[in-house]
Amino acid sequence: LVENKPVFAVACPDVYAASILDNNATGINSGLLRSGSALIVPVIDVKRNELFFSVYEAGFSSYNETISSSSARGATLYVRKVTKDFLIDFEGFISELEEVLLAASLIITDPAKTAIYCGGTAFDSYGHIAADLKKIGCNFIINKKTIFPHASYINRCADYRAEM
Image 1 (cartoon, rainbow, N blue to C red):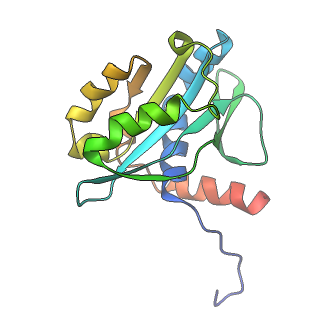
Image 2 (cartoon, rainbow, N blue to C red):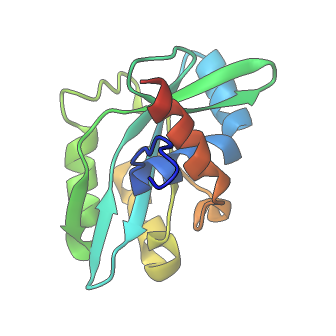
């Protein structure tokens, strides 16, 4: 602000989603090429037994709402937010996520072909969440590398905000 440079707000779940996309780009690309779909769900422990999460969609098309991109095997993957942010007690997380995934706004035509990539601090704090996700019946992939994203993802998300 002192140097009159532009400032862009970046949402914390967006940073995690960018990290999850980048760390799973090869798998996401392979799934999309097999006519599947890919969702990204960052789950952040905000303490006091509460979790903060959102749902994002990965694809080959860029949208106005694109928050980040990554490359895999010569293809560019884009990620955009498809739900609002949710703040929920950790005990109600699984049922809330299941309800969100079954909502009409998320069109999961074939759960067997939909990969749901998860990451975030909640998997470090609440280890049982990973096992509980399997009860929903979707193909959840939890990447431990995305528990704490690198700061470069903030810059990547800010670049997309600047282009909007």
